[in-house]
Length: 235
Ligand code: ZN
Ligand code: FE
Picture 1 (tube, protein in one colour):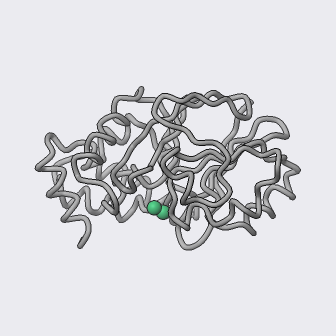
Picture 2 (cartoon, rainbow, N blue to C red):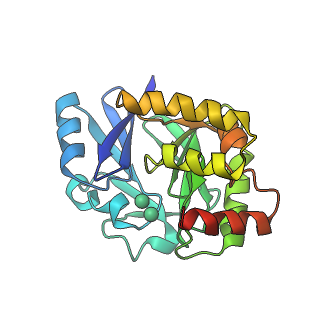
């Protein structure tokens, strides 16, 4: 059976560990020590590392975690700028790790080489999509990120969404300001506030929830999306 565990690192990042028996896949190890400690405590052996993009808060632990028999996956376009990557992936590539088959989706916008990993009823979105939000435009255009989110929004409603950061509360406050009459937003905000007050991650979300509350996924056109992305930068 596959289970997924969050390891909180840095100020608000999550490293996700997909576990299957005593094997696991580590997604976006942005810090080494907390991940190593968890793996040691739980007796898990790393089979592969999946990286969503090149930013340091997602890759800083790669070199320390990877041994020679661990595959480290990242976008082919990021091969040269992430130390330790052994396998490049591109749109439609499938990989099977810890018993789960993932299909790679290229989702440029936050960075040019951003990818999401979709499989087993889960999608790992890195900084492309957050719950009720999306990444900042660092290397891509608004048009690229808009298209990337639209593709994520086409996944089945019950797909679990695992994001790179715990930004949900702030994102929902922005969502409420953007769509004041959206009841799904106020319900989700109340739910997330109580989760966070007890120290529980707000993630995973689901594609169905995001379709109801995420103002970026809900943008009817590129102009609206661009306006919302700009407004969020200074919210
Ligand atoms: Zn990032
Ligand atoms: Fe990040």
